[in-house]
Image 1 (cartoon, rainbow, N blue to C red):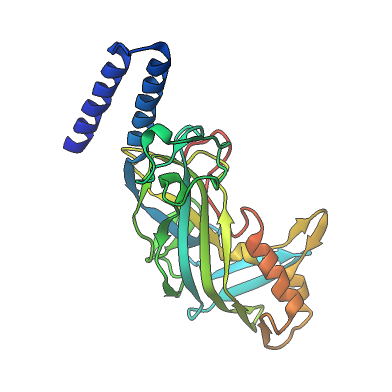
Image 2 (tube, one colour):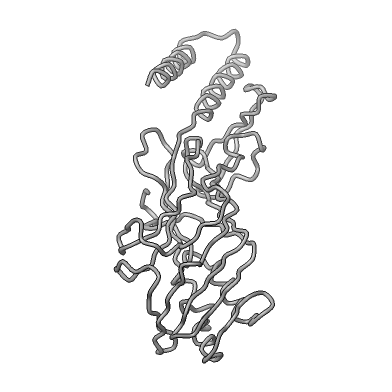
Length: 298
């Protein structure tokens, strides 16, 4: 609180100086005023806030059994049980942040004087790729530590739809004031053991990543009371979906190999493997910001 008071005092001093000083000439006056304004923006852009993240696995069947769910594919019901030795070897998870009003982002490079800082403009929620790497809005902010997490369908938390698994390897991120532009999660491997209508299925998905773009405003601000929520739905990985009007049915295609044990990887049952990769990358299917709709603040 003491630091915040001192910041406010300094900003007030700048504003008084900005509004009451008389500068030597009109040309010099404009340059001096611009320098002061850029200093104010520079000062604001150097503030950071520690924000946590809740990364969860869940299903939407409103019960406590995350490892058991039923899905319908082409009018046939499939009963699925995820085995406890299923795991995800996470690589990292990061955020990119846009300035508070998606308007100004000023370079904070120590080698660049404030009088020569350049304002950048961005549309809402786009990643500000034109900023230098040492700008607060040009950096990525990690929220997920590397490591293998097992038994990802155990019940250790809840969401609106019922039970959830809260991943233990998230961390606080010190991020600049603004809004979340994008989250990026990456993994070394996703290993899934499950039964589908009594048949043993093994799935190996190799290194990959997923960009998760918010549809709403997720503010990074002083006094933020809640963690950022990111959901991962394993059940959605296997659901039917439509691509350009054409149905894509993983479970129906999988059932053609029954009865028996099935291994799905980049070298085995490749058509099924490709469907899973496409489902992983589909927008707001497996990974999403929950309750994040246009006009909503999360």
